[in-house]
Image (cartoon, helix red, strand yellow):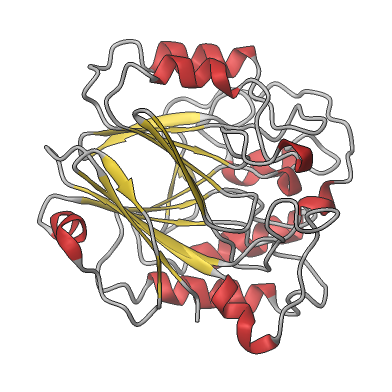
Length: 332
């Protein structure tokens, strides 16, 4: 197992550490991507398909999928995204406070998640202080393991060096890794390092995926994490990954594949055959819907409505089922 972080001491554990290869990165206008709805989304794997919906934080899990995930031996994890610790602006004057509320919501789910995945843009300006702050905050999550993938805001000016020093021990290359739990194979990809406009994986990472899944039977449930979507959600704003189809082609032989991303600060689901893509909301601030603004800049909403735009996601899976069960919860 590679690239997971023990919640108790904050240090990553996994396979033998390998030095990361540093790649040059153009300093784009990264801040234009800094928006997003904040929150946590609950994902449950049941009957081979991921089910996602927005739920009020007071709403209880219901339905066969959620019930299956709650059974003993089920995998249950949480996805949080785009905390943007260090952001200062009218879209959210206290991103640390809203991230703390998201952590409290994770701790109030009524069960202890097997792990929590933060799907990128942990920080806003990738400073050492911001990485230390978000790392310390995440030690408050009541879970055994915390995993991360980097966002473009986590690699500003240094091609991700500070991110990997804090969160990348035990990972490969620019910070990618995979692990297995509860009969599910999970892959964490990095598509925010060598990008101009669209996300980019690169040949080394695609080769990693090819070798990583080579021996897996086709009925293995696959979950893939990335920051930027692996589908063409809105390429005009960089909400796509230019070489993602090479990885998608490798995954098509599996009966159930779920791809979970952040970056766009809003919920969006797309299904292509056996592969389902789910974009998550944020814990920081909302971004406009595709095409409804000149650029994806942070959106200012009335204070009482901000928490409605933020949230978390929970996901569940019971061995033998085909689908993941997903539940998105508002922060409010």
